[in-house]
Length: 418
Image (cartoon, helix red, strand yellow):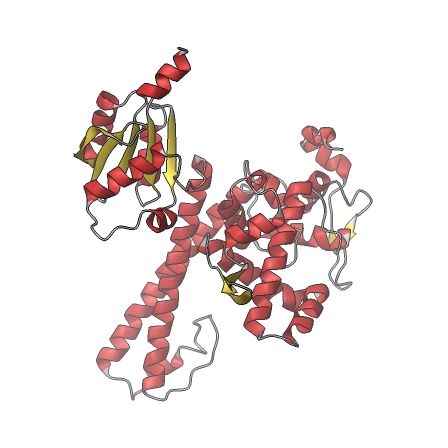
């Protein structure tokens, strides 16, 4: 009997049901018989317990929850294989009327032994860190919106007219001193203004950090291709890259579309097929970013504006935006997979996109490059614009570009790029 067969016969299939303060651990053999009785382990004792009780031949499954990645990092060096289960699909497979922590853990372990666990992709550390940073920024933006809405609700309550706009300067905050407002309301508005200013400062700090990361490994390569596309800015581009992770795990643009949840659902019964709204399965922030990009693209780019207008003849505006978002995501797949320039933009317009990207950074974030050198750097990485010396989309305000010779003196590694 081979060593591999002996190992498979003695292998344990272990599941961890992760909660906020503790985990429930149980294991079965490949016949589904319990070989490790379910035990509760507090999180502060988990690392020591795992080192003491796990075997190198074990296979372990955990569900994708808040603490999942920390537990995954503890498990990965200790066992042969670690899987992260999709919690929604696991519930669909293993629905039970009697639900306890112990039963859930054993069901998950038996699914693992039967090779029936629907898994999710395990993102590397740098992807997880960027996702967390972007999530923190989104939460702060939501808080900022709530603050602004509360202030506006006070104006509406007293029928006070206030100019619309995001900036809170003297022009659109004079209404806050109106005599119709009580002393307490003015006090509350003052607090809200302080909170708004503080949150804006924090959002800007995170934005600067994300922009700095966009010019460094491992994100700079993907940003080279995404930032040239219509509608994309630094935040939306980095959100898309973080949500995708590795483009190689999607064999076709259709699979990437399914992952985003922007594809329409389908209800089939017998010979009847009925279309439904988009599935909304997958990463929510990816859908948000693509819809934001679509909104900008249909306003700024003639090609996408025309396509959007054609769609509006046969569907609601919001549905048309979702269709545009889906098509833009397919475009993202093509440029990231084929590593090529966007063929519907002139080289001059792509150079302007790179200049816009560089304007959002200081010299330190650009690694000492000027804005003109920064734009040339990415044109050379993309392999275009060799004869382009300036950007003059608006003839009144031409923008100079650094020469290739100037960049090669600073970045000799670019000589290797054909």
